[in-house]
Length: 182
Image 1 (tube, rainbow, N blue to C red):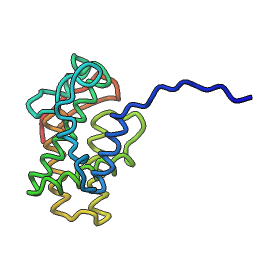
Image 2 (image 1 turned 180 degrees about the horizontal axis):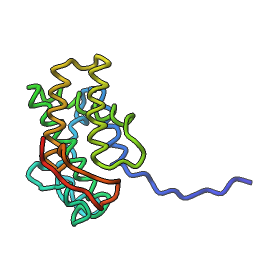
Image 3 (image 1 turned 30 degrees about the horizontal axis):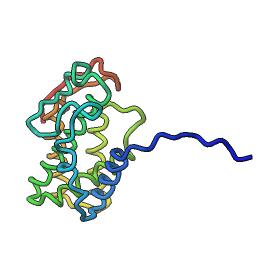
Image 4 (image 1 turned 60 degrees about the vertical axis):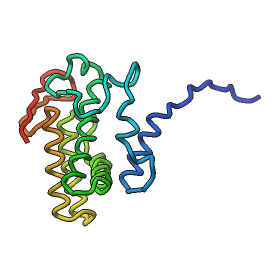
C-alpha cells in the first residue's frame, strides 16, 4: 500500500529568489539577478509591503508598533530599507557601486553567523558591524574598505532611526527609542 500523498502548498518564489540574490551578491556573482534594488524597488501592494524601498519613503524605527510598522512585515521593511541604503551608501563611498554591492551583501551574510536568536533590529545592526570586522580580519576587505563600510552602515541605520543612541529592550514593538545620531 502506497503512503498517503500530502497536498503541499507550492513554495513562494519570492523568498527563494531573495535568498539566491543575497547569496549571489555575497559572492559577487555577476548576473542581472544581483540587481536587488531594481528587482524589488517597485514591488509593493497587498501581501507584500506597505511601500516601495525608494529612499524618499519615510520609515522610522522609533515608530515601531504604529501603522504601517505595526506588523512583522511592516517592521521588517525598516531593516530591509536600511540594508538597501547601506549598500548604496557603501558603493558611493567606494566610488564603485558594484564593489559596494558585493562587500555590502557579503557583510550581511557574514553577520548572520554573529546574530543571536530572536534579535531586535539594533542587535542586527551591531551584527552587521561585526560582520564588517570579520571581513577585514579575514583579509577579504582592506582597512579603507572596512572603514567605508562601517561609515555607510552607521549612516544607513541612523537614517531609519537606528542610530548609536537608539534603544530596544527586546524584540517586541514596545519600548523602542529611535535615534538618528551617526
